[in-house]
Image 1 (cartoon, helix red, strand yellow):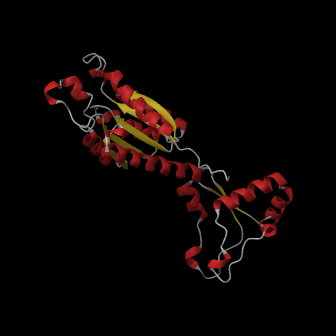
Image 2 (cartoon, helix red, strand yellow):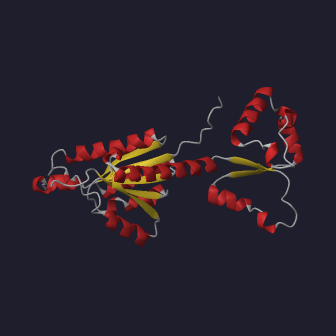
Image 3 (cartoon, rainbow, N blue to C red):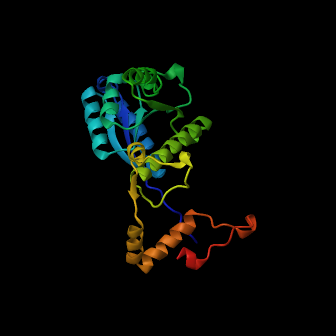
Length: 265
């Protein structure tokens, strides 16, 4: 059985938000929100992400520390989990310092409130959506691009939960592509077909926009690599080629031919 080729795991930052002023007033609220955040981080790990947690940010000072942490870790993407109301001054510094794309998670922990039994503490544990417009406004006025995911916190709660986590999966997959490109090294040998002006590449833009490294090869470089390759390295590369590319079916095209083992070697 062929092994499945593994993409690089995305490295994502996660921070929750709340207000420090709430904790002395509402016993257990902070712990409850931290539990929700642990669930979010745990699900992302289950989906294959490397999660860098900046914890629950509840003051502007902690926001600056969280942003510095995520910048040091070099995360590909940052998720802001909105656990309860918090001022936008506790979110903006993270984005400014982390310097990574931002996704705001507006995930409601329950489908609906039991209004006759809901007090201020219960409302605060469920008011994920109330400050998302404020955060969006602060980002827009600061020129910081962002996206948001809205729905239910727990995937098993129904369609709104499944849809939200499907969207989060897509963000993690996108972050994986970014990390793979930034760590990729692509060799370039020869030139494109003469006259096909649309095919010429600007390697500076590849480096600048994607972070990928383009190694421009001379024929002597290729000969040197071939001579140094061991049998084990050649076998691994053959396996990778056959896993990545589908060999042509000779019956599909009159000029197609089955790949010969010697040619592949």
